[in-house]
Figure (cartoon, rainbow, N blue to C red):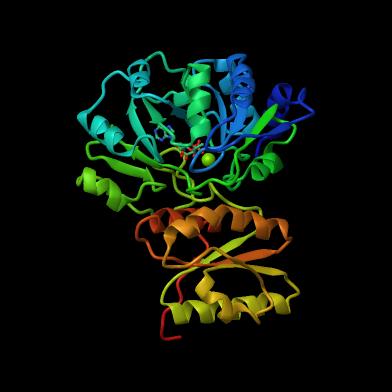
Length: 371
Ligand code: TXA
Ligand code: MG
């Protein structure tokens, strides 16, 4: 997927890092010597992986182009994909933006620190590597104590994409980040598993109507309680070969390396279709993995598929927390396909469905009830 020439170019930036250090950090009361160690690397233009409440981030000083280049190099991410800038206090917005709409103040008041990213008019001081040359910049204030302590210690905003290789599933543990970035970053801070489990909601405040570009940790319903005019336009299933409306909207963005299939529709028809597909694949000698809810265990127990349960289908927060770990666990278990059940779109369900559709890269099956 990544061009060989690009790899060789990026190689210059990460080849000299044979060893990645993993340091434990207390997630609630970050140890000051650990934070200082990470902060000194960041001040020197290096990159560090750190926990946030959503997923692990690969951070670099947002004002140092050298650090930003290292982020793209470690992830093998194309420069056309802009980065989110993480701040620890609202005053930093003055340095990063030209104007602050009233909507931004209202939303920041209600949801920061937390899993909401706002797209705002970019100040000319923001490096082009952050914005990918756009006139806007993505900003969020995370609520994880380690992330906040780190930003404060560096005294500069931190640009941080998710700490996975480009096109892979976002990491929700330090081990996930190590799997993807070992030998490419000097330090990973291990603050345990992430609380939310899906990335922040990206909300565009530079379009005529506040528009969700990526559903995430703050639900549409919750945003609308504060700003009723917020909208989300769902993408059609098979848009994957068409031009993308916004950066980061690629349908295969979160793909695990194993072909993944999402089953939706009425429960009975969905179960029947999944069981039939498991059987068909097993007859061809395939090892199949399924991502299901706790309530589905009895249905799939004797199917012969490798099972990963995400939590109760009626508790989207639980499902979100375990979703990416589920995809990675099945992938590492060596299954040759992953079949996943669909979930409701309420609350965090919208983000869950978005990530599953992207993991499935358009392979969404909706069996009807009357099969
Ligand atoms: O929860 C999160 O947001 C995590 C943690 C580490 O904070 N970060 C994260 O970053 O998910 P990343 O780079 O994996 O996703 C950032 C998304 C991408 O889809 C990117 O295209 C979009 O934000 N984005 C960034 N700047 C943008 C801009 N100016 N306009 C539109 N989209 C933008
Ligand atoms: Mg990402």
